[in-house]
Length: 167
Image (tube, rainbow, N blue to C red; front, side, top):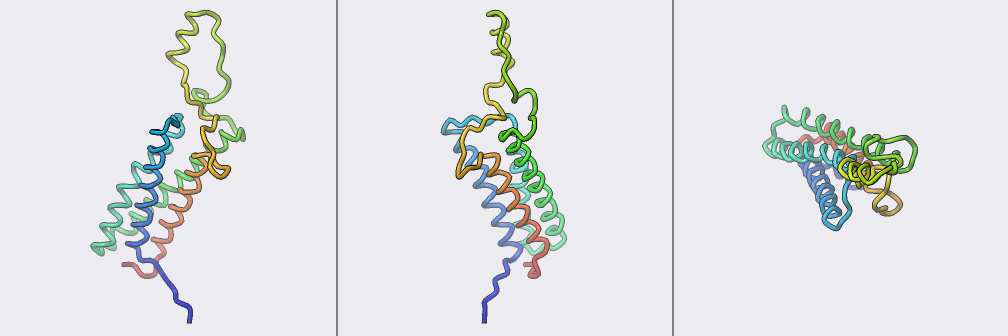
């Protein structure tokens, strides 16, 4: 007789919380080791800043058996990390050159005509480009990994919604 394991909503919420926190922590560690984030990388962290506290609230609601909070919490987590997956895919597409990214952090850098123009450019030009990959791990950039991890978190949130055993 096969053993069937169905995770509870608390276990799913805890898994979302741990994966999301580890992902954000990993981004901070890469930054500490000198991989400066671009503008799009920094924006990709915003869903985690919202999703991690919501996952903690979801854990609390599941632990306290507050069914009325679980449905909106898991829906919120699915939407937040679904958006994050799409945004990570967008940034990956910019890095691969599939489409143009924001003009303030992609494209060619114009050369200054004079020293004064150069000094002006130093004040306005972003050093970290959104279309240049700082590091690839197993063929994916950090933006690509964000898309994959966020898709997994979205699937987990949907699994939490559909969990037969509520608590």
